[in-house]
Length: 352
Image (cartoon, rainbow, N blue to C red; front, side):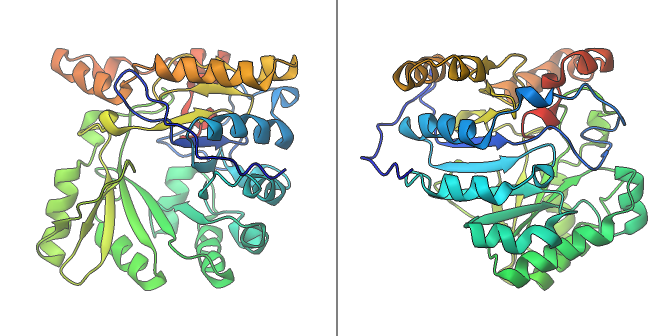
């Protein structure tokens, strides 16, 4: 399965943004019900027979890497709910064009799977950690599994993972009093904390601008505790702007709500059932599963992906921001009934 070939030519969209990073959703299921993501107990789940096999995921990923993708992130739902995930990681490691395979997880199943993931060759893990308080975790997620998340973080470090990242959705009135505590926790375990502005994606949430803790507010709050915060200049298309405290501690902020970074976005998303989305906010995706299963040739599929990316005009976060000027941003969330009718409209189905 070795696909080491010459470096592919860069494929650009209408704004010159390259096709570089692919988020692979391996399941739409999750074992939490976080208020900012998927607070309803039941959704319209993707039919199991439509989910891509590991072989199909590998074949489609091979198409993307032939067009320039070199970073892959495994997502969900909760990706550790997908059985035998280390098998897929080993398969992807055979694609020599991929320089990094990362995983985003809520950490609940991480303690029992960390060693297998490490042995399979996973490069990096990001764990969602929105609070250090078990009662707040229960209120946010409607589950009593906070201890398992912390155990998963410890286990991942113990088996050998480095460059661990902790993602925190920062929300006014919920965890805005814990930012310093989360930074200190990150320092203690050797992980980099990234604060994410609360985003208005999907619709089954009670999102409002009033609950968004902005990048500027985060910097002001942390600056009062740690002193001058220095932005780090990096040639990177990563979503987080990284900063450094006077003591050398580095953290990040993903400010996609108040300061969209569409101009440098090189990410696209493949759902667990093979729909390709060019933007997290996109309403429609391109079905790659059907032509793959119908036996369409690799060259034809590659041409299809190339042409769709070259025509890409998506700037979803900027368009959402523009709605603020006419007072419509908070009225554009998708109705819950529509989300139940089409699971692809919700963030958990397309890799968050």
